[in-house]
Image (cartoon, one colour):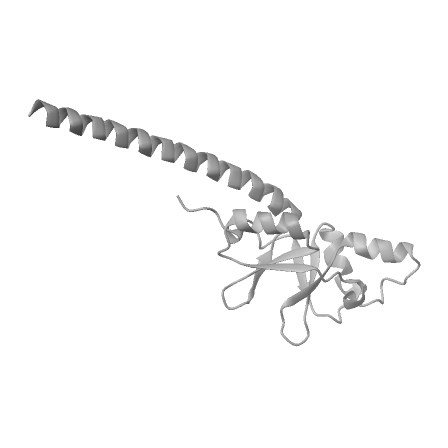
Amino acid sequence: MQEPTVADMSIADEHIVVEPKTTVSGIASELANNPRNAILVKDKGSGSIHGVVTSRDIFNKIAEGFNATKIKLEKLMRTNILTFQENTPLSIALERMSKEVPDAIVITNSEGEFRGYFSAEDYRDATRRLESHQMMSARLNRSKKAISQVAESSDNKDTESN
């Protein structure tokens, strides 16, 4: 039984990908519809994700007196981004996430191309999914062991009666 990977989670939702020069006013209508979405900011040169902004970040700047409608997202973004390839097993990813506590988690393919965003909700779902997988694997191993023991016992009885 194969362990689930980060790509098995719902990584295609809960985010908006934007260019670095995008202003808060440029994404305001999208955020109004989905205020829990993370705004992932692309790097100008490589196109990879190099920053994240949330509604909370924007509100904090407004509270500090900034005119958030004109400020560019690259000036607000946090840059502690953790990247995993889509085939990374959940156990490895969850362990690194809990140790490193990143601002955002980005999923890429083997060529480094963006595939999705691993949200806080995905993290909660992933821990449940991994626990379920581990319990199922343990049951499967116990069943295999029991079947092997019964088969071995049956083979021994057949050998003894001959």
